Image (spheres, helix red, strand yellow):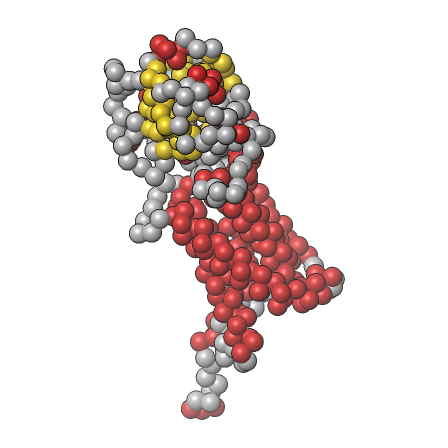
Length: 377
């Protein structure tokens, strides 16, 4: 009590007193929590697929079919992640008064629970914010995005599991109980759902070509770019200014005989045309008609063993993805090409001229451009 009998309230009470809407209740929070649980669970699974496709452990070998597996999973990861932002903002607004309760905890068990909530909220905001920066190709932070994004995902999911275990019975009871006045809550939840749907609709065109004109939030659109296909890394950015006049494709390593093939030599081999997508970690993807020679034809010409792994090396001198490994099941697939042309034209320099790898069900960073050599292991 202050002078004159005035009640002095703490900061937490003042903040909570400003949030008197009926929407700050357990039912709204429960439904938003369920939606966020599904969304973050989906993002975690699809994110693991993306990570292990780019950095496969020795015991894991991804199939080459279905052709569009990575395109679908990574598109779902990014588009679903963006659509999660309105859900998270609505959830934080709904539970905001509880975040400032005082005292912050009354027992050791409650301290653990609130600690998990702190990790969950902080990690969720971090994942969505840095993910948004990544698809915008803006990196205002000093750490490597993919490493931080990957490991933070485990913290978020761990905290989410603890939170679900603590709240499951309460949530079940809350959603099964019909409130007396459900109209405001239903309208609020429908508004949040509409906002998430609008974000998804304004992004999905980055991978679904018929909706490309609606892709206002997409960093790349199908049909936009050299030879009507987007690029992430240009030849200029990679330090490639022109095709070296003496360029030859060299096949070395554990081969029956080493090969050194000119562009004319490659074109003298049986040429195939396949339709395959470029699907990038930022969520965008687009299909093109690729013309070239099958990788397996070149490797068999060199007498490569059926179970060999092949490292594809780029003329690019620097970069985390200047090389990529091709497993037997991929190079045996007839859709895996050393591409020399795209959409009826000779391959543009920005797309990897004179020769690039294009294969089914591989992330875009592993579709090595400006190929200069194949090293057999």
